Image (tube, rainbow, N blue to C red; front, top):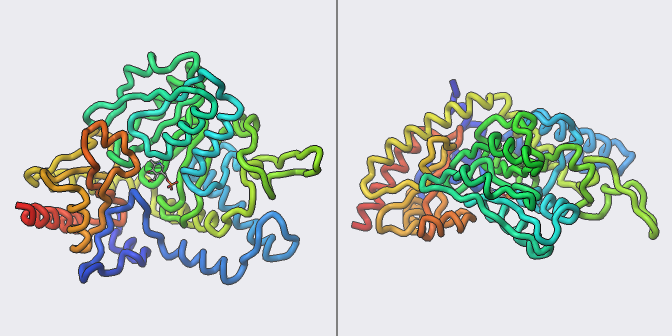
Length: 405
Ligand code: PLP
């Protein structure tokens, strides 16, 4: 069992008041708060070790390099990658997807090729592919979804053609909370030799991720959504792919030798890490992942399931509240609208009661277009949230309703 009150003490940002009310933070899908261990790590690194990695022969640089490379191993074990060389540090999920769209796209996409995505992607997993498709005169195809916000997999056989060169899809939808059956989809894609990139931005903090079991070719996630620092993310890639792909960016650290005639590239993973890395954030991310491991991924997802059930049941009692994203297989995120009330109004009024939710399109405009709405209100809950906070949301929504009656 999770001792939530004790866990909350680890997150200083949770212990504050907004407009005189204790904060209820339900915007975890956008970013999560950081445990003290992550904050302390950043303060410690900047106030002592602060030195560039892989470059210096002096003690501080050696120490920082060791900690940075240790963080890489922590990520490797966290997602069960076969090799540490398969872990590339990037700026975030967006950076990871752009790395593959650019690098893979350069080498493997030509005129007439097809890139397969889904109807429930975040803009980060749409726009990089559109830019690539424009550059290469390729076509984007889209796996559709149903009214529950689930992918319609019957169409996969038709959508995957000999021209399909890559499939990019999210593990969990940020706008609706749907958990996609990525393992099954990857299997089908691999039957046709189509590599798969999984956007794990909303999955990594809720469930156990095993990239070898999924057999995905690439997996992307952001540090700040998994209790780590901002400005750091991970791109996992199978070694065989990362070896074959050209570097994404050129610069320091990603080279083995440079002359005006010819440059040779560094071995993995540095081949994909041009420039001075955000090593304090990478090390902070390692601490965040260790923190989660110490609590237990299964324990976290079990608890979050109870929050989802409780919130769904409670909010279903509100007359005129409609949920968007009603798949049985969901993370603890609720997307909804109150009849006749704009989501921004709901969000603004809740804020005045100290309740932080997200309102808008959640960077998933095609999802909103599908439902014919401007946006939704999204309450995304994680393991430091409580049933009492859900009660506060419920009461807040009742007040919002009364104000508009
Ligand atoms: N993909 C999904 C599913 C997301 O939810 C997000 C952020 O909300 C992103 C990608 C982009 O993440 P970042 O802005 O950290 O790069």
